[in-house]
Image 1: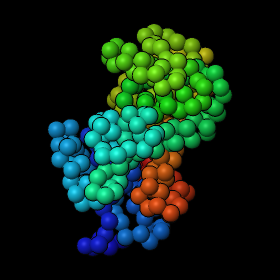
Image 2: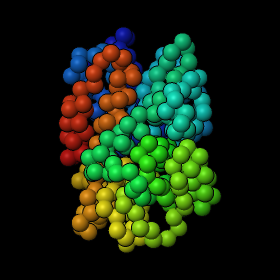
Image 3: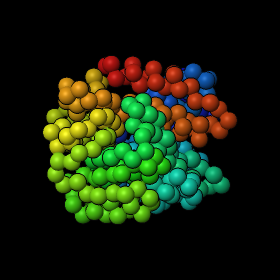
Image 4: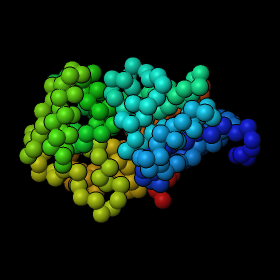
Length: 274
């Protein structure tokens, strides 16, 4: 791909962002379809976020948002989709009429990944670890599927506020402080990005869990996924969620164009074999 003055710039903004495989995935998609566009990662510290968003609007930018900016960007966009407003977090944006439009494709990605591990039964008990943008997308998915939700966080006040918010959008939610019996466990924290990270939750603290989804992805999969599988629990890391939300975002960037999902999945798999 030759970059020139007409090449469209797409970005993912986060802090940290070096771990993101969105550039590899989206650039593979653009090459496969012969699109004159390039996708890059921008590390944006929180104090710089307003300036970067203003720049994006000024140049007609589009892209994605990762930790820790999803909730802040949702508050800053000029217009937001219904799902973005419902989640209270933005992971996808583009420009219309000089202003940024915010969307949330994480909900689609979480739902598709949960489908793959069979977490689709009405009345299931889900535990989500974390309270950020990905946890919010998980709560919306739980509400849509009639699940009961528990939330666990190192910050008791954030866990309480999250439980109140999630209950307000239609999913009965309680704070889980100790061991809890659940059907499905979901890690929506960044724990696992670094190899020395502690596990998001001890497997002994979720007795009876049958399926688990780690929204973090890593070469060889995460330690938590391996620990779960050693107990005979069906578990998957975040690569499929990444692909599914990325394909949905791609179709926002290029309306009327079907995302080459298999190409994007192959690019992620290649990157995670390194």
